[in-house]
Image (tube, rainbow, N blue to C red; front, side, top):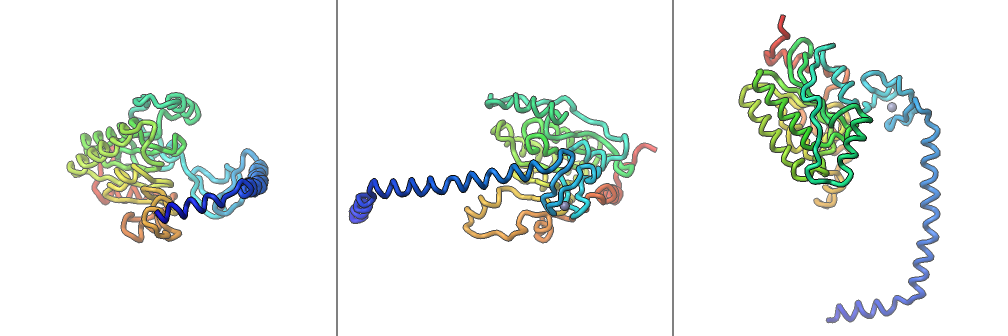
Length: 307
Ligand SMILES: [Zn+2]
């Protein structure tokens, strides 16, 4: 009772005058915020269309100078690669044969605007969904490959990504071929709700069958690999490689800090931190990935292309 009385007493003291004062103070603070906001677009506009500002070294560089591997010429920062460029960089020339090219997402929950969003992204990216899959050779060794693309709804995993990757493992199991997956994902696709979440179990089950058949599975974690993808097939590889300075995690940093009420180290959720703690087997520079994958396939007696 005493507590309630105290609160009541406190409320009485808040007069209309003090409320007015507070409102005035908030009003005064507002213009400063909007002034700050206006500054940002101005600096952005200065960058010509064919150039890009490197978020790491802050230099403005020509997009062309990033080269086919999308690496900053000044500081070696790795820019994100789309699935098409990645396959070009990894697979032997002309060896890639795409699977399930036309598989498209339905809208199982009738999520507002989802179908329109998918259609818009299909036109913009030339992809049907966030993963490209197929067979190819790397250094002459046959394999099944899946490459996720952050340009399509941040590489989120819905029914199409889950089904295409499941088929990759099923094909690998049936034809006794190794599987290589390049992960890049914001996690499960919320527009597909539970249908999206069940893909984690579905792909993982296919990974297990492929493994029971004695076949090799290699994951290459690229920036960013998070959420339901990390929590399923990304971390199930027999060998887990990662690119340098890649963001790899499940929940976001802030959520974890709020939950455990502790400050996390700066390098937390980077590939370097995960290597140190045993979650990643090796960090491989982008230009060395084809050779590294070739060596891994060779060491595991994988099949060469029909000679
Ligand atoms: Zn740079």
